[in-house]
Image (tube, rainbow, N blue to C red; front, side, top):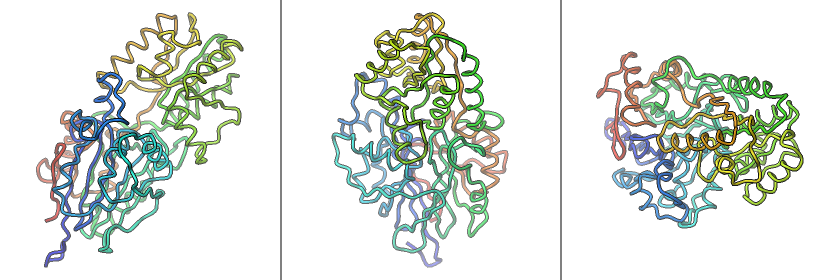
Length: 457
């Protein structure tokens, strides 16, 4: 694809996550080689339908539902997909791999924890046979892409609300394309290494610099910086110590994929003399995987139960041995209909809530109408049983304003592409970039799903 003046064509297809938060998917073509970043699910599009089992559905039906990216635009990219690269293990980044990856003759390349979650995703798939190779690559490593010898893929360590998150960088002769989704600047994370700002600064200043930066705009309109996970940990510790002398039931819930937070809950439960137990399918899945891969070292006697029968058995045991001796850490912080906490609120488990019992939400409501409605309902039911609710013991996994300024300063990109939001969500980020000398239509590319952006012709 190198012309006479020896430039390599660089083109970006914005496939999903440019009109919503969810179903992220972006493809970058460098010459003849294409790399796909993320293949996610839009959960809210699934939640509004009752009892949908996505694992049994055809990808075309899920595309029509708006649940997974419409990747048919990929046929307009003149090149071969060389790698599918999910940035981390959240479903809005890996949830469509089992539906779409088999269409591409390319390996799935991700960090070790993410690969493990992708593997489980594929094993749970009932409709398609996904046989792509799974390749582990850790932060700080680089691999060569395609046969030109001129394109490399690098993983830079970032911090997010799930462990082992990376930002991939595609190095081309025309400069680097940095896919910057889902991170916050955490210099004191509870698990794993701090964000590698030194490497981002180097990438911004070496060779041809950064040609394009694709950025997650989730919190771009919020002032200041996103606090570190260690801040959430201190907040949680404060709350747990304040209820140390309570001799009734205390229940906690958080994102089951948020291993750092689960670890803090387990530790503080023991500090206040309670035995922690992890309950719910996804609790068992994520924490079990993290422990198996040695990301965490849980106490030997930590019970993890996913299956409903074993969960109910555990609840019976807790009721028999005394609620004051346990801290159940359960699924259901968004009020999901089938999750543990929601079932507890409806009185469908052997665990009986009494007047004054504490329910600790170490999570924030995802600002999306379906979630807000379900969470409202769940809290209402818990309160009707006398529960006292502790809310919002959490920090976001996404950059706020100050972090965005720092990233632009570190990378000094020639082009900026806002992602991971809808049009309204892009606006604050566009304003922020314009304050730094960028201009809409010139080097800020606001786009939507299914579009192409040609950066180098």
